[in-house]
Image (cartoon, rainbow, N blue to C red; front, side, top):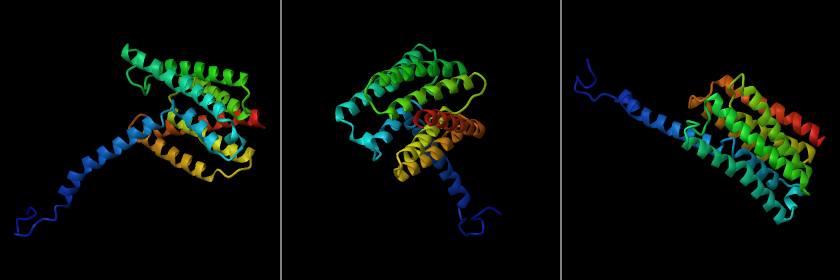
Length: 230
């Protein structure tokens, strides 16, 4: 007997869930896509710079013109230039997506990113700025070089690698400068979990690729900052 055949209305629970499910799936997919874009690896050095600026250290008292100069340098070298290159390559058909799913696409974009991070680090070495800025961008260049080598043999999540580097930056700043960075640590940890979950949910990476990316980012960034800030 079908629901409602006895003159009583069926509960309609299964039909309601089936109607709601596609909407929920669409919402989750959209949220995962937004997270993947907002926390794309190309933006993470900028977020790291903002974390340094927000901490209660002597870095927050840098002259505004110095802060502005570093911010412009990072945005030009490590945000606008890579985005411009990716746009040109996409328009010419050299890459299929901005997420660089193919190994050759990753090698091209990582190689250019490595060049620009190295240029930023070199310029900072020539400027009269605190050592943390130099150490951070030299470490980013080392992480990028390492992930480029790893990409030759195994596909890891660059999102997870980048967010792992931010986690290490917060930990090192709290330890080296003996300051409380609780809210930054909580924010980065929650963001890491959300971003890693989004990469798995969208099917761009397997759990092992995501965890491998996180491990690579944290270990390499940690070792690099340890030797430069000790």
